[in-house]
Image 1 (cartoon, rainbow, N blue to C red):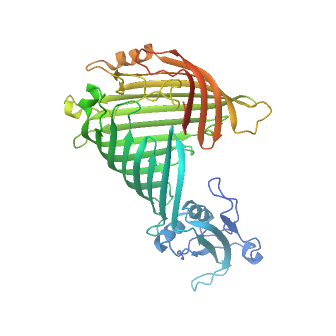
Image 2: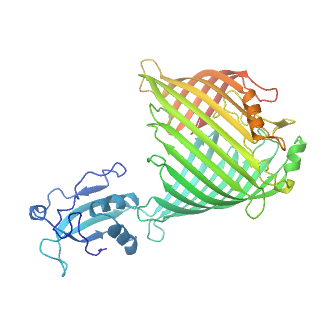
Image 3: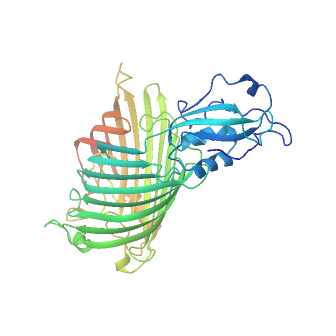
Length: 463
């Protein structure tokens, strides 16, 4: 693939210096991917030169128009970086050659990349543990579907709580800097909620998302999307409460959503500095179904107190506001928040905080949770993935009565927090965190599902 002649950076009307092909790769580019010719023709580097063309050899499955766009729209010294960012190539080798183009001027050079493409097909089976659930899954992926760095991926999984799930997505870069991607996906899952609610839940839906940036960059990652979902609460147990029976059956959600995430921590579990911030809000009710506005915020801060002693502070909060007085468009059990369990407020059973009806957790419209954790090395074993752990958690989940002012509802949720404290062990199985905690609830409401003694938690994000 050859792009049109383009001057390298330099003053207009003057020969520009040779392109900085051998410059070190950027932090986002794997140093092992892009290499340069160690011994280039010294005559090509000893005099001012103009890049007459950029050629990419070996990209047999990639569209020429896609490669041309990357070559033309970016400075010569950045082309290798963006080629690496596509994740299409197993290796890239750059070299300079005297230009053989008929229109080339004396001293013009060609920048040539020799590429070795990655395999287009990938298949993996796995057993995974996360968010207090174990799953067995199979994943298939096709890379570079249409020759423009598109990816199609499908996953099917069977788990202990999410009994069955399926997800298929097609994503593609939408801008020449590869920082914005579009994704179309369909999904289905059947979830067993009988541990805290006498029913199961089935979801079938489709989603369209625009995604810009990455969580670890200075501006973070933004996601803007639309989601249409058909939900069904069924398979009621004989002991199901009247509230669950009233919510049983199908419901729909048609919603726009936006999410922003930024993570500057040096490690998700054993972080010594940085913070993770996440915001998400959703507007549902477009074209029918449940009508509401829902917002969530999350903050995690990591600090090192002393060598081998780490502090982690976390906080989460959310609010749900109904937008219609029509009972048929009210938020359902599927839309409300749930709180409690080893990954949120420890020493309480999963989703056991907040309003209940005959033992069934009904969720709430307001929640908050906060926690402080201290991690320490096992004495004389700092290299072990096993760490000592001490924690304090607090939080509450509340329902908002019809017509109740938001300020009064927030004050009520803050007035009576559920609190717990304890110690334990943390095993770092990156990126999964496994906890064995021993603790007690220090304050609880009569309806809360407390858990004294030992509690085990597994997941990716803990409070």
